[in-house]
Amino acid sequence: MAERPGQLRRIGGGISQLLEKICGFSRRCVFRVLSMGPLPNHLAFIMDGNRRYAKKRGLEDGSGHKAGFSALMSMLQYCYELGIKYVTIYAFSIDNFRRKPEEVESLMDLMLEKINSLLEKESIVHQYGIRVYFIGNLALLNDQVRAAAEKVMNATAKNSRVVLLVCIAYNSTDEIVQAVKKSCIEASGNYKHGDTESGIEGMDMEKQEKRIQLVEIEENMQMSVAPDPDILIRSSGETRLSNFLLWQTGNSQLCSPAALWPEIGLRHLVWAILNFQRNYSYLEKRKKQL
Amino acid sequence: MEVTNHKALGKLQLIIMLSLRVPTPTSFDLRRFHAGDLGRRWRLSRDCLFSYSSNFVDRGIKFGVRSSKSDLVGFNAAEEETLPEGLQPELMPNHVAIIMDGNGRWAKNKGLQPWDGHRAGVEALREIVELCGKWGIQVLTVFAFSTDNWIRPRIEIDFLLSLFERTLKSELETLAKNNVRISIIGDSSKLPKSLLKVINEVEEATKSNTRLQLIVAVGYSGKYDVLQACRGIAQRVKDGEIEVEEIDERLIEQELETNCTEFPYPDLLIRTSGELRVSNFLLWQLAYTELFFAQELWPDFGRSGFIEALMSFQQRQRRFGGRKS
Image 1 (cartoon, each protein chain N blue to C red):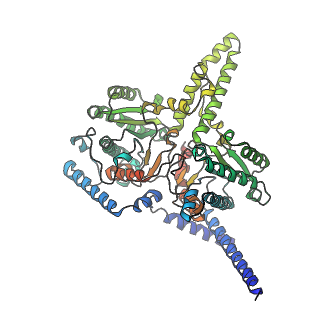
Image 2 (cartoon, each protein chain N blue to C red):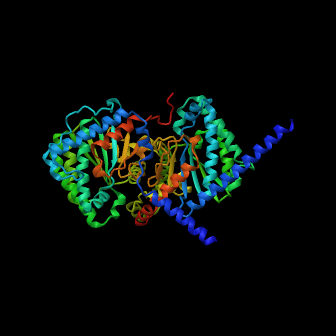
Image 3 (cartoon, helix red, strand yellow):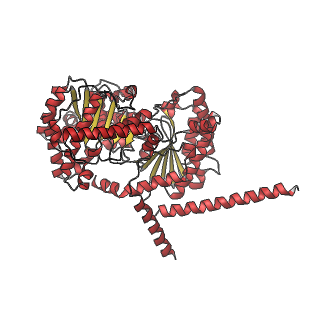
């Protein structure tokens, strides 16, 4: 009699392992079919709907974000298995600092915990050789989170297979302001350089005033470490950008599945990629013309 | 074995891709719309039917093809009209932006030339401008011509710019009478001199009108706008007017070309023809804009499409990064 629960547990474990293997196999089949067509190079995610998920399931507030984190890990796994090189996620916006202090603090604690876990041996970072960037106004974060983020960036700097960009304390308008500031500083540096030349040459330099060019602003953007996203997926059905990657998503495919972020799954990713492939030839033609 | 597997996979992929060429309804907005009141849907259909029938009676327009005979019917944006049932006045957007996409495809579907599509597009725009005036929308921004569109065939560009010039000239009196103010934004350096002259005249003549501000983006793109703002700021820094540390979001906002209006940020952006992209239109200003993607091509958009977009907008919960407690 005492053996029965043990036996049942072993059988249960065996069945779930088998199911996992079947799921993994069918997923790889789906990915092989998808890879017949063009695949996006860069995917961006707005992870919206964690709190609504917790409310819907009657859970306590923080658990929505925890469920969201595991959904994120699955999604990253699918992306990197499929061979997508760059993934960007919108973890925390500058606007989110306006929320209740308790919520902001619990989010910061969760982020600190998860950022530190990235350095562990079993983490997804080591599994896929991910290089991690933290993009945003890191000065707005508390010292612990900022230190942890910098540690992860340094530790993964040598990885080059795939890239994860985590937008934390980020706003697209803030990113543009920083880039504009840098461009202005560079431009005024050029003027100063011109002024120190001898009299005649100095006049010539002033006449040939160098106007700021688009590439200069783009080079000064924090997101210049990655190409523009091909697809932007926002969960929970809202169709707005919420100040995320405004500069970079001008020509990105926008997807807005109704599922809340913890409910997001493989089918949403596959659907987004199939839609991308549908429009791909038209977009490539446009890019070549430009 | 490997080769046949490869071929089979390729065929499966082809089947999936071909099957997806069947147009699907826009996933997000129609779903939320359907989730709403059935009675409201019926009222919307009834409203559309009435608007079509009044078109038939008044304008004698053939179904699906707009003619230029709409000039005969009075364009009236100055009078207020009660909103169609289902739309709440307090939730109307202040600023609506529209990407008028699909003229070329519309003309191709009907076996017409691209310029017929653009002409039909102008008629559709008149209708929307009239509705905005009547329903109390303060600002309407339309994406007429992008910096990317300069790569189109020369003959089409010339037609578009001359159509724009002709429309501005012919509509000036109507706009003035209807208290509509026109502003043009975009890179004017590539536009022909005659068009620039007409633009200046029209802007000057309508600058004190207050009912509706129609902003037309010609030779415009979001990146261009930020770039020219950046150049303006750099010049001010060089002149010693401001310090680099003082550069912030408000300063950039003041330098953007949309500073010509009290409401520079659209509440709602509508893109027709089913494309799910922003295409570099109004980059900075779209930070918190609600996006609506309509399946119809622009010349078919009209009153019913506009009502659907507004209804979808009114259902949305806008949080601007905060929380609705």
